[in-house]
Each structure stands twice: as structure tokens, then as C-alpha cells.
Length: 147
Figure 1: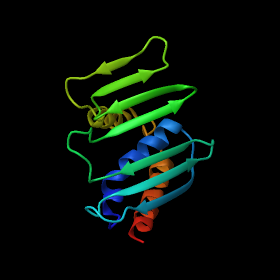
Figure 2: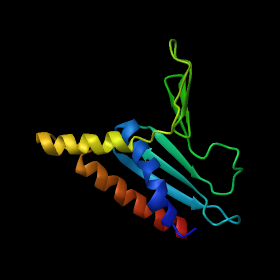
Figure 3: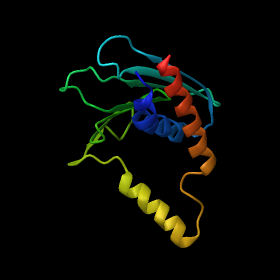
Figure 4: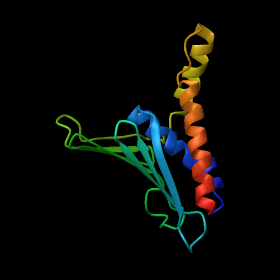
């Protein structure tokens, strides 16, 4: 794996994990998987608050399996998001799930938040320090996957 897919695509999941955790990244590792298409890697990220994230960028799976899946485990509860369309909740007293007609990765809301901040003179929706932190870590992860 050339590491390019981590920088170009995997970065979004690293960024999402950083946002969900809300704490600085304290460590990271990446390991390319041998064989297959050459576009597969496993990424580990640890955070200053003790949280961890695992990103599996696997290009060799069945097309029938959801392309993108996010799972969050916290306080004995689980949220599972498939293809940014179906959210399932486990252990949440008043929530079991939600389905959308179309995939929503939040690009419109993100662009709107940025434009609103510029127009109204508000702080950036994502602090520049956080953007640069994720960018630095992602580049290092891409380099590690090339080894």
C-alpha cells in the first residue's frame, strides 16, 4: 500500500475519531496488509484521555458488506453507523435506530458551518490546531503504511 489512500481517504475517519473523542492524539500506528489489492491497512490511534480508535481500511471485502462502518463503544453502549445511512443503537434506553433515505456524510452541514462562521465573524467550526494535528498524524500513518 502506498499510503496515499490513508492520506486521501482514511484521513476522514481519523478526523472523525478525533472529533468524536474530543481529545488530542497521543499515539498512532499503521500496518499495511500483505497480499490482496495492496490498498488495505489497519490503523490504531490513541488519545490523551485514554480513548482508542481503530480504522480498518480494507479494500478486498465483499461488495455486499457495508462499505463504511463506524462503531462507537462508550459507557456500556454502542452506536453502529453503516454507510452513513443506518444508525443502530444498543444499550440506549430510548434509541434503537435511525434510517435515512440518502447517505449523509455531513459535507453540506460542514460547508454551511464554515460559511456561517466566515460571514458572521465566528470562530472556525474546527480549530486550525486540530486540523493540523490530524493532517500531521495522517501523513505519518501514510508513511508507516508504506514500510
